Image (cartoon, rainbow, N blue to C red):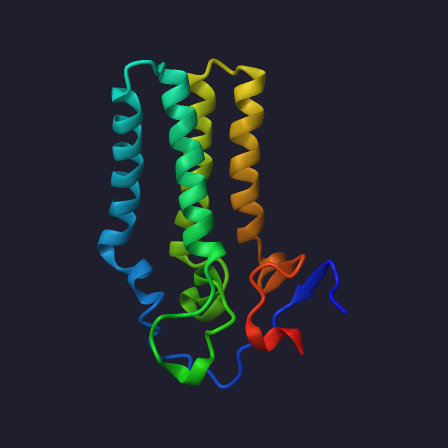
Length: 166
């Protein structure tokens, strides 16, 4: 019987020094820069739409970036590569990064960036309550998924791998 909250089985027999090609790119030099470039590009794109105000542009930037981060790091499980005999098949990219180690520089960066975009969007929306609630909800969803307490935790059976239903 499925429960509200389920924990994914731990990854056994992973070599600490093995490189996972699915998550290794996140630690490379250009990855952090690309994150900033994506945010700037989103803001420029939303800013060029004729009917958008700066408040709306920053809110759309925040929502888009949070959605992108959630789907990219927490919404997709597995790896497209046949490495480690399926050890990463039931893990999200966030759980695969740095072999599951918490508080690495990359994970800290990817946690701080949505907060900074949220603060910028809140500032440019002149602290409007409705816009604040929308922006805060988006960043909260992304940040909760990054917490160590939710490492390998699935809600309502979402993102459960095929082997996790046993």
